[in-house]
Length: 414
Image (cartoon, rainbow, N blue to C red; front, side, top):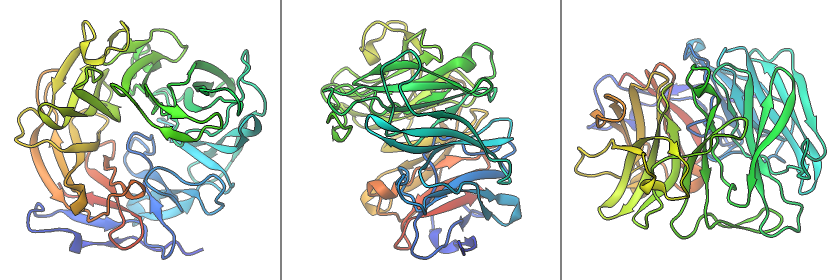
C-alpha cells in the first residue's frame, strides 16, 4: 500500500509567518484522510524523534469498524517515513509508553452489553505483538460490561498503569453510566475507579510528573447536563453551568476540583491538559463578560461540590490576560512546561496557530507570542486543527483539510 511521502509546503506560509518557518505535509495519500491524535494523547517518544498518527481518521478519531483505520509510526529523522503499527480492525486509543519501548492500544469488538475488547502491546518497530488482557464480561467486582471505548487512553509516567473510559450501559438503564478503567500493565489487571451518568466525555490524562504521588493523579472532565440514550448515543453534551474538571487518584480516591467554570459566566470548553511535568493544569474557557475564549491555569483543591471557579483554595492564573483579544480553543505544551502552542479564531477563515512561552507557574501570563500560520482548514469538527508540540517543544503539529481532504502537518523553525 502506498501511503505517500512527506513534502514541504511553503505555500502555507504568509507574510506574517516568521522567517525560517518550515511546514511539512506529513501525509499525502490520495483519497484517504489522515490525522493526528487528540492534543493530549501520549503519542511521542521522549526523544522527540518518533510519534504515532492514524490513517482513515478524523480529528476526533476513527471508526472502529473501518479496516482502513490503523496507527502508523512517523520517523521524523528518516524523512518522516511512515510504518504501520497495527493491523486489526477495531484499533482505538493508543499510548506510547514514556520509556519509549511500546505502543499500547485496544481492539474494540464490543457491543452494548456484549462483545469483548483486548488490551495489546507492540514494539515500535511493529514486532512482538502481544495481547495482555481480554475483557469479555463484567469488570471485576462490578455488574458493568464496558463498550464504546473512548478514542484516547492515557499512561502513567512510570509506564506501569494505563487508563481509558468507556460506556457502561446495558441498553436499558436511563440515564446510562460511563466509567474510568485503570489497567495495571505489569499484572495485566483492570479496575473500575469511577462511574456515573455524567462521565460521558472524560478526557482522562495522567499527570506527567515523575513524583511518586503526583504520578498517580488523573485529570478528568465531568459533563453535567449531558443527555445520552440508553444505548450510548449522544443527544446533548452539557447543560446548565456546563462541565467541570477534576483530579482523581488512580485508585479512585482523592477526588478534587480544578477552579474553572460553573459560575454561569465562565464555561469550560472541554479542552485541558497538564502543564508539562508539573501539577498545574490549563484549560480553555469561554465567558460572557468579558466576552472571549481564555486560557486559565489552575491547581487542584479539595472537592467542595461542583462549584468550579468558586472552589475554596483554588488557585487561578489567566495566561491570556496581557492580550487585547483572546479567541483560543485547542492547545498543548511541551514536557518541560516552557513552550506552548494553540489555535485561535476566526475559525471560519481557516484558523490561526500561535506559539508562546510560559513564565512562572501560577503567576505569569504567557509571553513572547508568535503567529505561525493560517492552516486554511475548514475547521469543521472532523477537521479541527488540534495543534500540539513535540516533547522538546521544537516541533509543532496540526491537522488541515486545505487540500480537500484531511491530512497531518508539521511545522518547525519557530
